[in-house]
Length: 127
Image (cartoon, rainbow, N blue to C red):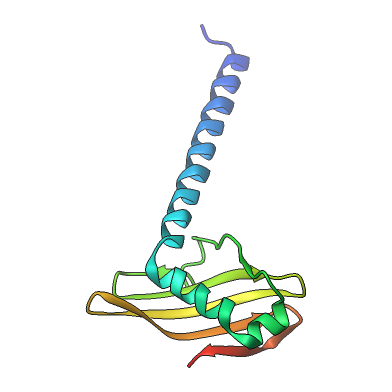
């Protein structure tokens, strides 16, 4: 006969293993997206934009985005759109970008920076 205490311990360890595995896999997917050409290209445009550098300061760092936000973070192989939390020494905010695949090349078709202090306006990075 297995005691209730032993069943609770088994459930707790099982929950820990499942939760850790989920967290690990989510971070692997995020890291894979960060290696894609459109992601790197979009962040390069942000880091070289004079207005973004003015408001955020240098260095501009990207933070982990939420995979669960499927409205803002989405890619199907032909189009992609993302909302990336970014920060600098002066300010922080959200960087929105939209990309489309043209043959084998990805092109950033639109990119905007929304600052935490000015959430009602966005700085256009790419039209």
